[in-house]
Image (cartoon, rainbow, N blue to C red; front, side, top):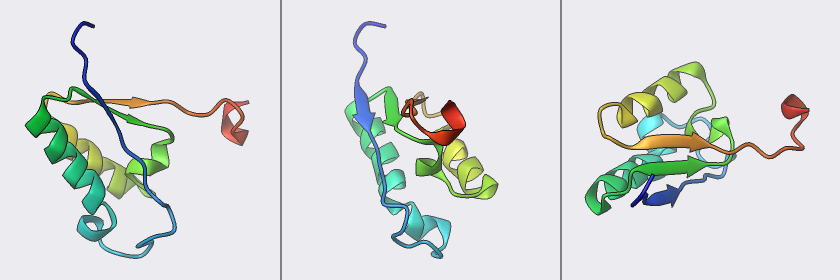
Length: 84
């Protein structure tokens, strides 16, 4: 695709581990808002857990992206136990 604007997002899995979604993923919510404001059309993450540790958190993160015109790309490291 021409004119792709890609933004990366990561988080420290241990920070705010038991906090509610809005606190735990405040940086992801801000990243989506920043992507919308700057015309970014892809958010790149390195592992699926970056957007949620539970099904409910992942669903909420995907719902946040839904209808925004922003795609999500997951690039998992090749040496992870579940990717061998």
